[in-house]
Image (cartoon, rainbow, N blue to C red):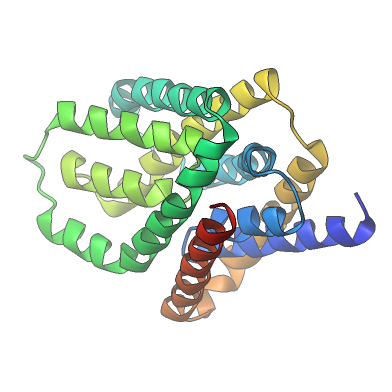
Length: 252
């Protein structure tokens, strides 16, 4: 890896960390850049996922106070996340790369749309949230399916998780966000272990993305919220849709 390539990946990691701190969707920044640098899609995906895991752990630590009293919830949903993550990771490595190439453009488009709708989803969730709405079976199934998505690709899985949790659990948004972070960590960590054991990893990408996102998340937490969220979100969405269209064309 040349110095220029390493610098680009590190800088992209910083941007992704800032994006995650402000709006979420940092994978929509790092994954396309890795593709543009010539890395194979599956290698880029698994290395990127592993590199982003430390940032998720950092988010869990920041919200550990909000996790107090949610042990039963995690014991209910954690296994669904873990099994779903293993399922998604297994599908990623078992299916031909052509399937991944076919799936990624619509997944990126879906992640972009979810990111665009994030403010409206949040408002709708707050209006509909009710402490008596406990469809736990539906929630477990939804978390399992999100785990599959997270293990296979994962961009914007947090948006899906926080929507499911907020509708069903009847908790405050801060406590819901804390549980979302913990479940996302379980998904990412389990998938990362599976990838490390069963496939090739670019440890240089992992290291650069990890350090970059760690730096970026600190910058984003301190200064990023001063930026207009709507403007940043729109930019990411436009870029994400453009990437989805571009990949859909070149991977035909």
